[in-house]
Image 1: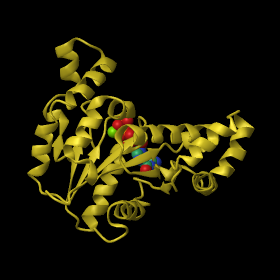
Image 2: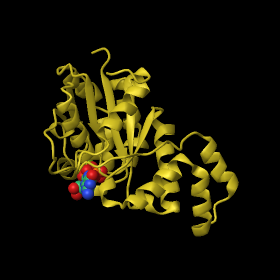
Image 3: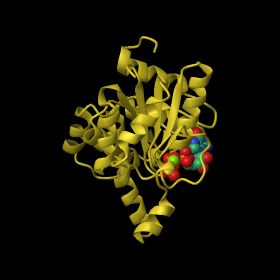
Image 4: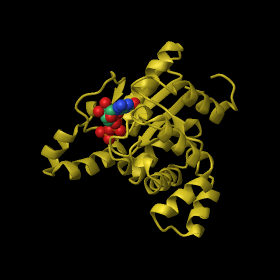
Length: 249
Ligand SMILES: Nc1nc2c(ncn2[C@@H]2O[C@H](COP(=O)(O)OP(=O)(O)OP(=O)(O)O)[C@@H](O)[C@H]2O)c(=O)[nH]1
Ligand SMILES: [Mg+2]
């Protein structure tokens, strides 16, 4: 379907991808925008949403462990690689729906999607010009300057690998105090304040920091909460901005 948009939710394990996928889907429901959810995590037991397309219809972590006689970590890697072999099937299943937006919930550990070839294969197969990633910053990791910088590096690696536009969100912002949120947002908007805080905690060469800053990979973080629905409109605006320069989808 032309004009279909693919939104990939990507972040470290437990950062809130699955619940944010659900919260954004609820928001699109309210706006009456047709969309579907694709679950790419073969290891998940329970989901807070009903996936329209589900990798578990093809294989699960348990089926891989049994078939290949491997433990859970090995099965995760095999599962990530197997996804790359069924992309055409998934694409056919997605096309049956003719939905305007396709929300894609990616597997637990982000490296399974960003570092293994299958992530790239999926993005290319589904259509890279119509795709954007929402990168989740874990709220607890984001609280310290070194944690925040580490997440910027990880977000950068996802852009570098998948070559997609990226919207950065501060996930589960309801677990942070207002002061904490303000401080983290300030770092994302004015990275020089981050450097000042960072050198109190860790020794990072100014050259490395300036390289990161000048790479353009610091984005204004959008605070969101899947729990309260906070920030969904801002994420939506960010996506519109990416594709239509701000015009409504
Ligand atoms: N307080 C709060 N908790 C949240 C929010 N979003 C998710 N959680 C909780 O955080 C935990 C992990 O959330 P998930 O959405 O499953 O995270 P994930 O990134 O999909 O996790 P994996 O796929 O297992 O890596 C769950 O127990 C959620 O209840 C949020 O906005 N606020
Ligand atoms: Mg998940």
